[in-house]
Length: 262
Image (cartoon, rainbow, N blue to C red):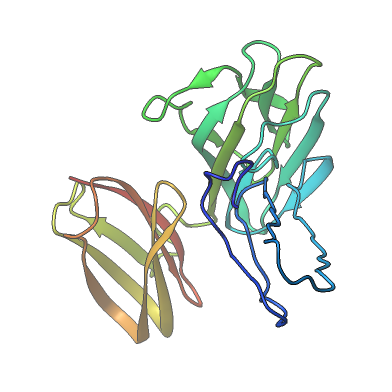
């Protein structure tokens, strides 16, 4: 049973002399029962089990990807008491890092997440408490390519914890990469379509990634041998309303833009 009672969903039921297949439970409790009748007996059975535990956060974690998801390491469990751990976000060529929260539940005033500018040790934000979806902590932007997250908890109450994702701005991302390279994103807000307009000084292949504000990749596109004035119209009609990011990468282009889907 996938749980701790015989009313839980049945994962498998076996008899005979053939070895059953491997059984996987996505929960953290399994109940095994063995029932016999009053007739024939046999040698019985022997099983082995293994489990996966959350990767509870400890020490320092380095993050160098241009966008990534971070959490306190507790998975579906509550985080531990007496936690002290850090994440160092420092992607290559980043000049700005923005952190966005997906959920946040900690003991108010005692289990605290700090966001620190690694260039000057300035505390940019400090969060604790229970935040409902739709009322999460605001996005926080570090005006350098060097950000630390510091999470510390006391010895009493614990909660579900937190999860966030970040993206970066690199040199030239906000518009002109040089006098002859430009990326524009319009209209904004957009309803059914969003247009990417590029002015390129050099022929190159481009990769375009559309990401939701939850940090989940939604769409990916390629433009081969783009040069001069190039445009790409992206249909967003089926996407739910919200904030989205578009990342355009090429040999001379490294652009991140944001738009609102109405």
